[in-house]
Amino acid sequence: MSLVSEEFPDEVPRRAEEITIPADVTPERVPTHIVDYSDAEQSEEQLFQEISKANVICIVYSVNNKKSIEKVTSHWIPLINDRTDKDSRVPLILVGNKSDLVEHSSMETILPIMNQYQDIETCVECSAKNLKNISELFYYAQKAVLHPTGPLYCPEEKELKPSCVKALTRIFKVSDLDNDGILNDNELNFFQRTCFNTPLAPQALEDVKNVVRRNMADGVKDNGLTLKGFLFLHTLFIQRGRHETTWTVLRRFGYDDDLELTQEYLFPLIKIPPDCTTELNHNAYLFLQSVFDKHDKVSKVSSGFAEDLVTCSKCFPTCPGVQTSTTPCMFVRASFRLTTYLDVQRSLEYLGYLGYSIICEQESQAAAVTVTRNKRIDLQKKQTQRSVFRCNILGAQGSGKSGFLQAFLGRNLQRQRRIREDHKSFYAINTTYVYGQEKYLLLHEVMPDVDFLSETDLSCDVVCLVYDINNPSSFEYCAKVYKQYFIDSKTPCVVIAAKSDLYDVRQHYSLSPHDFCRPLNSSKPFDQIRLLTGLISI
Image (tube, rainbow, N blue to C red; front, side, top):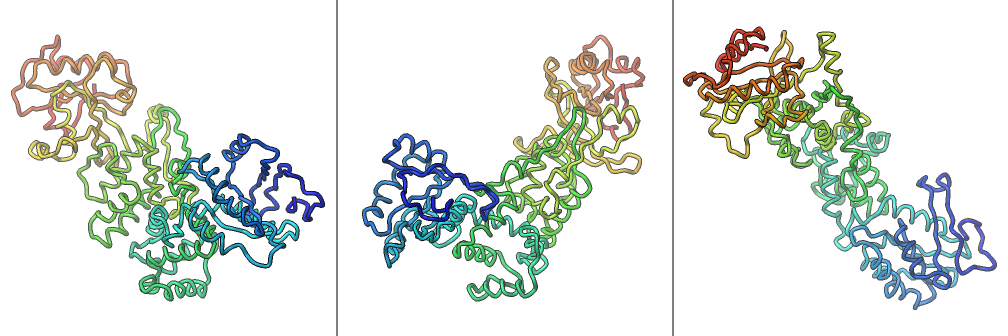
């Protein structure tokens, strides 16, 4: 009541009415709803309902009443903890009221309590009668919700919590643009602009580094801030009550109150109309190239990039079975092309972990994705800007589909036999050139079930029907699939005669492959061994 009226009332009611403080009169620019409780007027059930809805709880005690202080630990904190989930406890503010009645502080008694209960954010001594620290009290209450200490810092150990160290380490690595393990002045200024929309003056930069130098030996190296120095600064911010600085950094880099990257950050909204595909644009590949290069300079191999991905979220082990025959850098490009085509949300997630929107100064990593034009329009205009094309490979079991897919990557049978079973994939992607332009062909081996081909199995740019020339029952599957799904389709089809190094036996089908293809303007099925010299569309 003193906060709203700015004066102490002559008669204090047992319970104040609910009050809402508008956002425009609070330092944090958020509305605050204050709910009072009186055990003389309300039941415990009403109290429990209010606790379940609270974002922060202020426990008020009288600084001149020893029993009132004791009740904080004997009654109020246990009651609140019993009614809240251990993993989602609300922050507590201890409020020592009636400070105008005593000349001493209660903090000597309260500090052990604060050390015992991690949920206690701070303690404020105030006087409702003299209006001392009343507005400050609600400022700290807001701060406890928006910038809680609990997830960041362990007061007993006087150090950052592991989850906070992990998040700040990722932020440091993303900001370390040249990957030398040091944030130089340019990188510090980029970080400062990213988080706080303003650079640091040269003297301010030196002052920051001098603070670190005075407190730790290896916090500054080659006039740049090391990871240890970066973590020390955030520890210092928190110890000095400037939690909002660390929280501003964490939230700018996509973290929520539990120090997990938010769904909104990792998976920004992107609309994909039917019959359209998704590809990374040129700027996205420049970004990936820069991330790869900055690790390659240090390690001379791709392990640095892989380590960064593992640090981010162990990305590539969850990639959908990508196999390529390219160099490590080209592997990264091809992997992202495949993933973006098949699962654009996963690509957005990877780019989010790598800090694309931060480094490229974009609203989100959705800016890295191009949604291609509807395929029907491409066919009508007989031109396309797409760079990834999908070829589904169908055939009976044992027809040689897997061998065909691996041969596309330049792997002969001897190399194929060395591939572990758990490393085998139903996808392969490799570069090809069309009229001098680099394109990517994505091969997908479809499981042989003629009666249950899904929309995904049928949705592609070209179909390869593979049969084993040494198995008399193999071609029948290709003929049935073609007649059932593709005879009236505009999808071009190719028949591949696999295992041409073996004896060509007569197929148990009413028409030979040669005769089956002839009415459809194909001279004969094409041997896999001569695949690179041409294909026959039927």
